[in-house]
Picture: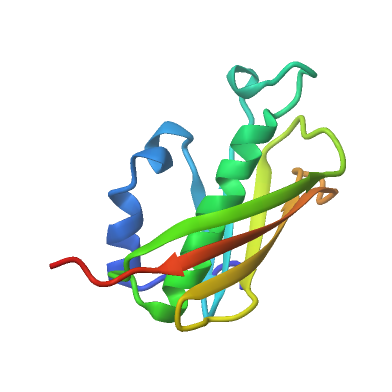
Length: 138
């Protein structure tokens, strides 16, 4: 999946999301219900244990899950996170990469599994994110 370029509509939608600029997120690829997204490590993002703050890793997982869903239902879809959980497995002191894969595209709910790895490829967290499909904007 890395290296699969998203279509122009998805690239445009992602470019309009402020968190992409704020966290300097880099899209590794996005296609067919999967996405890869990297957040560069910066000590400014450290939490209490001098490692990537867990809340920012959750943001990375949530954003990557959203992208994976949009590859299946369209870049203009209106969706929102309903819930997510994350299990932290190790401290991350390097760039963090999230790899998301859609579990199911439902009529209303879309659960997504996300693995987060450090720059060496070590699994640092696993997450599950559920999105709700909303009516299109008027």
